[in-house]
Image 1 (cartoon, rainbow, N blue to C red):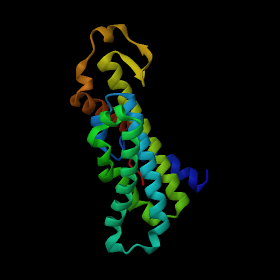
Image 2 (image 1 turned 90 degrees about the vertical axis):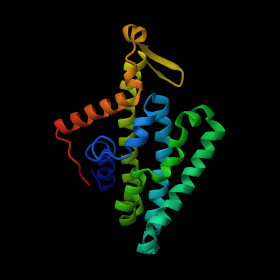
Image 3 (image 1 turned 120 degrees about the vertical axis):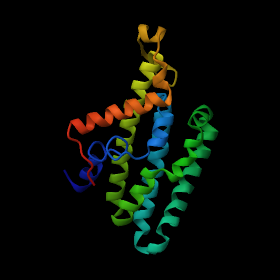
Image 4 (image 1 turned 60 degrees about the vertical axis):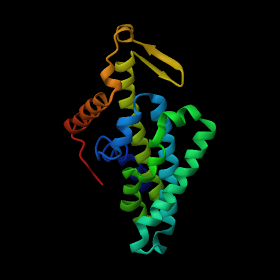
Amino acid sequence: MGKFGKEFAKGLIISNPVLVLALGLCPTLAITTSIDNALGMTLVVLVVLVGSSTIIAAIRNFVPSIMRIPIFIVIIASLVTVMDLIFQANFPDLHVSLGIFLPLVVVNCIILARAEVFASKNPILHSIADALGITVGFMLALLMISSIRQILGTGSLSVFGFDFFTLPVLGKYPIAMFILPPGAFLIIGLLMALFRWRGVMKSE
């Protein structure tokens, strides 16, 4: 596996931003009540993370050290604003569902961490691979969490109005706690424990 593949692969499990690095937990707790939200947030993070990593890697040798954080935030904020307007115009229901957590991607610690730790110190191609891997890892975590919460909390699994399956017992007697914040904490905690039990450790 080449350098590109290694940088991409590490974000899936060994540097999974949510379940291993424990980054971006605030939006993860809030928006994983449905798979629709998870996919919408993943799209935003994909565009912002890949775009900002590419730009930052391209200008890294020209940015004064003392100015790097403000410059990174301006780049990230510009991309988030574009995505916010796109969602507002084309996906109004999803825009409302994501709420304040869409514009707050500007200060999402996953985005800022990859900009500071990786993109500002590596060439463009490697930064793109890192951003893609972290985004896919983020998506996998969101999908696992939202699927479990949606099934246990509503008794069914649906994506954009299409029902994949329904559990009759849970459909009639859903465990509402899993749609609420305590359910998110419980599911994330159990998945983190599973990763730790399987020997997945933080790695950079």
